[in-house]
Figure 1 (cartoon, rainbow, N blue to C red):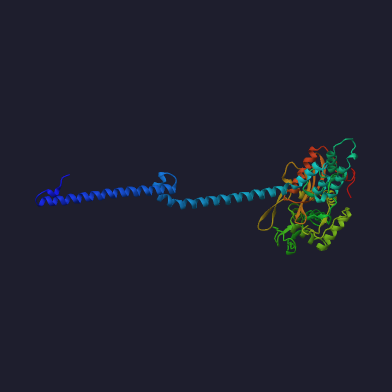
Figure 2 (figure 1 turned 180 degrees about the horizontal axis):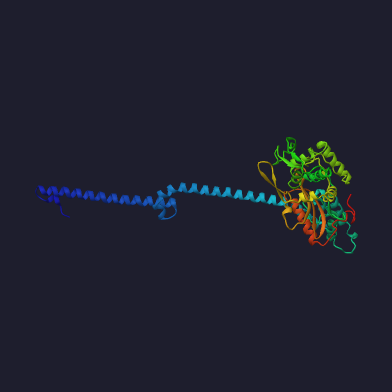
Length: 431
């Protein structure tokens, strides 16, 4: 290495000083580079140790830390939404299952009662509906005595099933509380289910209202005006016949039978000789004359739950009123256009079966209030046989129509003519 201090002259000293400064700067730069390299290696090692996911995570450490909180928030929101959605779906499924079980409960009870009658008679008595408790007790006794069967070795299950069909009298699993089907010509009972029970009859009352009106032989073209007295203040039922509307007695009778118009029925009773009180008295007098011993009327519309009767009594009434041509025509009229002054109103029949071409209906009347449930009286022809069907206390908007369809199907396909051995013999009307 050249020793610059040995150079002579002023330039030798300057060169020596510059060389010393240069060597010092180079040594400092090298030392700083080594220190920075060591510090960088240590920082990278710390990042790798803390992350544990390789060198890629170390390179984007700061960006990853910024996105970490946002990622956790989004994850929480998604999980929360999924939990809420699952809870809603679970509640809907539970609610549907409960409603479905309520709807099919009578059928399930009936089938289980038939299936378990031979092996568990006590369970049969408990499972039977309340209004069939007496018949279920008969089934219990029949199932407890298998020796009473005609053929030796007959299965107890078949015995109890047959006893259930014979004594319960409801082989078609009707939804109605009371039911009666009779031959309109002979009075022979084809089906009977608690037909003697006295129940509210709702607008089936209007069949008697129409009969009393026609028995009075009043002028059918006489105009009658709807007044405030005809407004229902018991149930506050809706009516499109406003006070001041004037119609003939014949039109009011048609609306009362076809569309079950309460104001029309009340106007017919109000304009009866002697007023409404005399009209109701005439209704009860006619019921006694027909042998309707369990029937009582308090108003001409059926809105009162105190209008009561039984399926047997209503079958007697249907057999009598079907001889009135106007009652047959008006009760089965599908729809009618009525002039109420400034405009015309379209009224439809309340019986949906009238619009079904598969039915041959001679006479009908529907009824409903909360206390009575859905009620139906039919005079129809099935398989060439004129029958009267009475259904009371059916719960469900279309339950009475469905029961009528079940009865018609049974009569077409069962091949049997007598359903219950507890009913009256052929040719005799039930008392």
